[in-house]
Image (cartoon, rainbow, N blue to C red; front, side, top):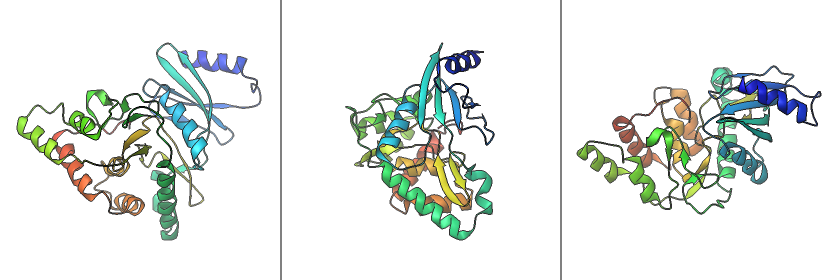
Length: 266
């Protein structure tokens, strides 16, 4: 009902009303988007202003194909983000049909996208946080997926193991957490449902609600989580990131064993 109210109000107030259609994208990412639709409304309680700001930064500083922000509205405790639609199919549905040449090109294009993201400047006062200087929003971390923001990597690392009850386990975590990294703009959810492909080429990256400034290894280790048993996916991720973060991955895998986190969300 809230979504219908916002949608009706937006159409009545929008100068574009009558000449465009809207598909619906709820907070879990389920989406209905016939090809005629060029705009989407995403309903969320988690990303609030972070995803809209992330979309602005991506548009301003990169040439990455991502949704363009149209408008943001609030109704009760929910935020509605109106954004343009990005063409293409989810990678998870099409990768097995792609040729080796197309897969190699996709890896190169994703690597190029990561390089562009890492050039987005952090204009907040914190080293680690969301795009507005607020808490990190990521199901990998404790406290229901919210933590920080943080001034140092040590603060971030301490938070990552703060909820471990076992003293030996916490000591193991503290001993192995990665240190001394650059902090870069990170999408934080390179799940194959968020990578779109059209005619064998990367056509877009969606779902930016978990974006923020994080240690440079985070994009790689998050992309590897839960995919370890899928050879094709592991191969693609390694082609994108190379072997720069193998030590960090081993550490993260130890922490995953001690503190498993859900696969839903970021």
